[in-house]
Image 1 (spheres, each protein chain N blue to C red):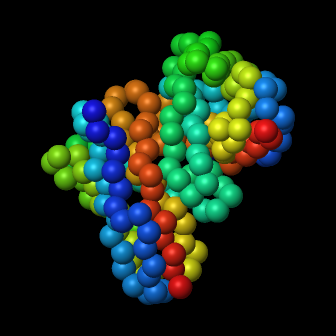
Image 2 (tube, each protein chain N blue to C red; image 1 turned 135 degrees about the vertical axis):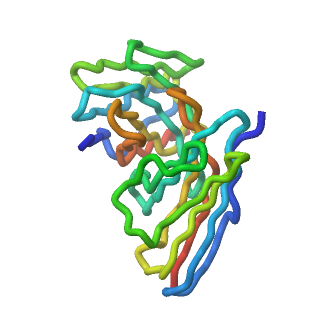
Length: 111
Length: 112
């Protein structure tokens, strides 16, 4: 059983640029969600995808967008990067009302 | 809006001591509660999942209890070891929304 895989592990971008983060969900899991974790805080929900449709969104602006593919993998896109977007981005997959499996995260630094 | 609070924010204990970590949530309408471990700069590792109909879950030295009506969960770690040093996060999945709501975590240091 494969876990959740995220790429890249680290990324440095300049303010105003765009970034795409990728996630492969755990085998058998059809739901993918993304979280942003600032230093010293708990993860904050960005959005969730189920069967390629966004079915929930947290308090994040539209410049945060995503996709889920037929194989349940997912992308998180962030446009017009701001310094405050620097954080650990976590992808999680789940199935039904079961628990969530998280990836190792992508550390994004915006300079 | 679900609010999740973890107390204490940090804890330092000598090796061998039992750990008690607390989590409280404001909305008792939850599907489940999950405890995670996070090492510095790393992702989250699931420790225990408790469904709303359950009172506790156990795995090895770990035991988590859930009192849904009072909005509380406690994670017990028996006979702590230096390898238990990490941040522990609790998260609840609400009945009405699609997300996990997290606490800020308890950072544990076990001194050898």
